[in-house]
Amino acid sequence: MTVSGLDHVNIRCRPSDLPALRRFWGEVIGLAEGDRPDFDFPGIWFWAGARPVVHIAARAKDDEAWPPRDHGAFGHVAFRAEGLAETRRRLAEQGIAFQEAPVPGFPLHQIFLRDPTGLMVELTFAT
Image 1 (cartoon, rainbow, N blue to C red):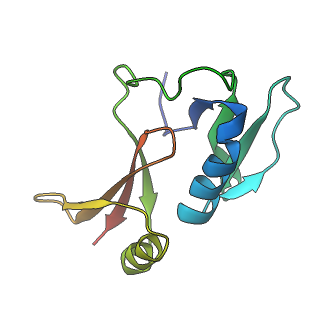
Image 2 (image 1 turned 135 degrees about the vertical axis):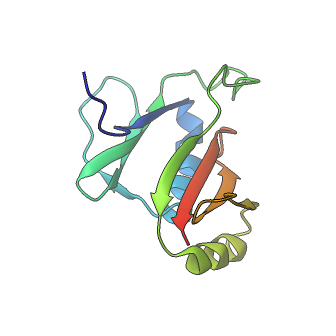
């Protein structure tokens, strides 16, 4: 077996969380909402180019305490990105809190932010 890269990340939520997740992954991160199979539960697929990379699955009940207190061993999901200055500006304009970190010894710069479920999202930029 050869792993060639990340296929997608799946985020569980409640149906009432869908509008906030739609805004975050679409407007804040800039992914395109696209085709999704006709599952028997609500959700959204977000695409980067020709690939659906974020799958939102509203499988929890609206009356459940959500999000879970932690995400188990899952730390974060990271995406390669371009346009560091534009990203900083867009996040600031939208009031999205983020942290930055240059990667020591590598020509990379990271921005960290959280989606509405508390999931840590890393955007990695070549510098």
